[in-house]
Length: 344
Image (cartoon, rainbow, N blue to C red; front, top):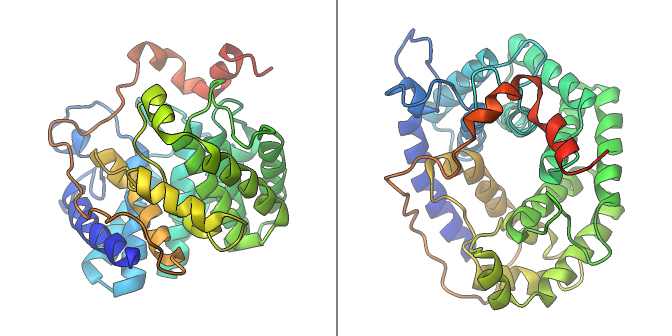
């Protein structure tokens, strides 16, 4: 069963994540996972997306009741709270950055962690409320995955906090996202199609569907899966140099839409099903594999899946942000990308 492969990778990933965190009692960065800052000051800022590691840890605690993992998750959420800007946003690529992406994804990770641990603090709820208010007031016109993460974060927060305005804005964002799906079934970002990032959108749509059972999400997933089944993988890889895919969306929809199983098999046979090459990927993507483990429904015939992580020891970061853009980051880079890509 592939869920045995998933859990073996998750076990290795959890042990590695625990090594990232600052565990020095009383340190200003206690609970921080972004070791390029706290360990050797290689960077002058903290990327709050690395705090998404608490989601994987919370999931692991929920499954195995590991007290060390519990404490690490609590400290991680406490530190996440310290990173919030006055307007509710969180930094990603500079100290004063107000990143829509980091706010959406990290808030989603934190709210899911609270539900898994069945535990919260008033301070945490206050910070989640501020980040949700920021997501309500802003829109990412360019990166649909960020907007989908925001929609899902608002849904989860609305359910957890019993806040109707978050639920209403979540559905509004979702409806706008679905309108942007092309007739062929894919979503454009920066005016181009990327299969890996579309698989992330599928994963986020899948998690939304599991909470709401909204039929229009099934219709959207069906369009994308039909597109995926008709893609010539070899030509696509040659053109895009792509080798990874987020598998959880395919797991979720494998028994929900026509040809779902065939799409899942094709994904497993042709792509790296876990994007964990770099340490930042481990923080932001391991929990997606945790979800995939939960969503396995039946065994299928596919290639033998590898269980090694093979982290790149030379690079902790797969993307080097432009320092020139630091001038714009305090205002929210998503607002300027809207102009650049003519989403007016």
